Length: 429
Picture 1 (cartoon, rainbow, N blue to C red):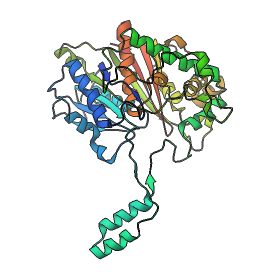
Picture 2: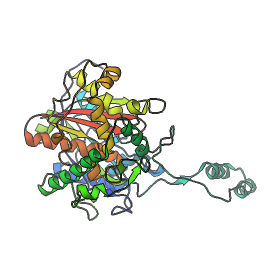
Picture 3: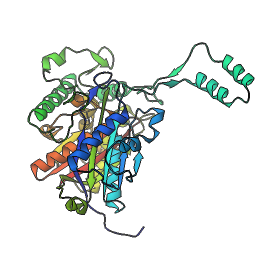
Picture 4: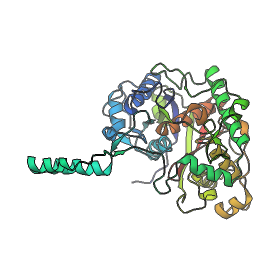
């Protein structure tokens, strides 16, 4: 590849469908129907009918075998040009963020001028498969060379059918993310009151954003929903305080309200270079400055410093170093609320002198942030968290916040299962 300057990458905007609690309003919908709806809204909003884009990158975490070409199949149901290529990606809860980084990098390198990053997930249509015993027997039946051999293999089908049902538990530790985060949160001294306050703010901020029309050009109605049905407008501190722990045992601090629920939904984000936008009379909202992925040793590491959801702490540190910024050099912070405990553990680590010295190699803590600038239009605790769609929701949100302000910078931090993460810096266009 010839050496050349990187091309600035702009966010024109995004579109998503309202997120719905699992086994609820979207029961009967699929990853493909939801992703198509998110893309359709984007096509309509930005006049992309017949447009040949550089690439569409999408993904989902919970996928059926038939969804091996999920993004391509969704695109074929839209009015985008069928000459537009697609690619499927997956990185747990960071899937949507990684599709954005993928498209942004291609634009920056001059390989494409425009693209869409998208993602979807549904736990209402889970990929329930056959377990290993039954699967092996069925394969042997299919491979049999004669009817007699097929009959012999069929006779050995186990009387008790076993099924392979997806689980969020990590294969290496057998802990679901909530159970693992309960250990990390306790190590950082995260309190129940602080977690409930994060949840309360999330719902109140989301409700206010819907009421003031912030999402009018970011969310398109789908299957009878016009706003996220996990939103609780009547939430109160008193009501939150009555909930029993769901992780960490009887004395745990994590509840159903300060932890994200299983959610269905899809999102999309339109990215381009400056000339592509200008040629179509479109005004960019924001610019992607840089991104960073990271992983932690959640298997054998210290749960406090290497907990399964602690990778963003390190990713953000690397971003700040490379861009010569401090943690306070941002107008908005979008930290994915997988659990309020995770958000608070992240903030605690950044403000801990021993951690920053021993694990980040800094002579002083990164410090604190202004909590009034955190997830100002609501976070995952209120919207819900369709794994592959969260990155798109967050990125489109900060782009609009920056466009409304007319200046400034935002930090995006997304934790992901298996000890991974993606972080981004976004600036006003």
